[in-house]
Length: 91
Length: 325
Image (tube, rainbow over all chains, first blue to last red; front, side, top):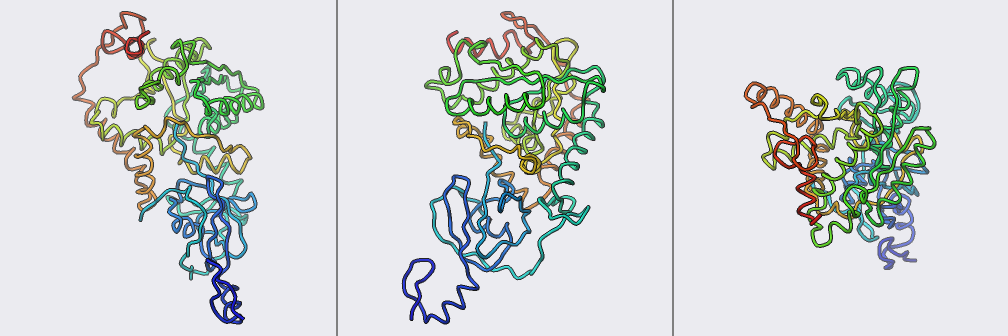
């Protein structure tokens, strides 16, 4: 059995290997400042690594998980939903 | 390293794995989970210690610079945004009637559609909660029309026009409220941006100007108690107390040089921590070098309104003429 790719749904590889990899690479939901949602597949990594991969300067945002602020070095990963809130406002 | 837009459409990207294996950071002062990392001191802080750290540093700034004394009545410029909200919260905690310092909040409502209504409401909610006297001053009372009307066809001048009129409205309202000083919510990031913008414009007089000193009876001294606090610390300080509100952005901010400077400095600060503080320190050094050479400025009175100014007509009256008033 071939499971779909987590990025594009294309059948990709034998089920047992895909299942093993999907335990390692899981999809994280990130709520961006404009309220859009981006899915990122990765191994656990730090908040700044996630932000930098999205082209966001960690100094211009604060990040929360379940309403709790996360400092930049915090590890986030499997099945997390994190919210990115922009703090630098014009005006 | 490049920073792009954070508001991009949904999609999937791949993040390189982390191999550090670090545990969740805890506070440097206790064992609670950390909510912020301070690169300069290389330490993490929890909610409680973040709040006390920010408030103690603001108190230290006020004490070291002698910004507030017994008997002062402080007019807090309260836009309703995060910086002025934090400023009023902190000042209301640091000072009370026993310390013979009173606070009055002043909100200038420029009349910017889709922007100001929400922030004015936030300011009203805050002052009601804190029991602080609050005055809302509409732009139309000063300029005869709101900002949106004044800027038709000249949107690129928004920040200049708004800045001049807002400053005038704030000073007039502070005087009317019998304030002895005006406190603004400028943070460390704002200060660094201002230094850099003045350098970019080659505006040395403005770069070294000290607005905190006042000048006899002509100007109300302006103080900036948050000048030692990073913007991110302020946002975090409010967030952990439930005071951080996501408010709309000024629609005219895209025309401002400050927006580009902010992004550039923020990027540099991330890569080279301390950049912003160094910029601010450079201002002090330049002012020191210039102190002996500075020509004594002649202070005149505007021939139209009588306000203090450096020329014959003040900026506000000049602006009124250019706007056809």
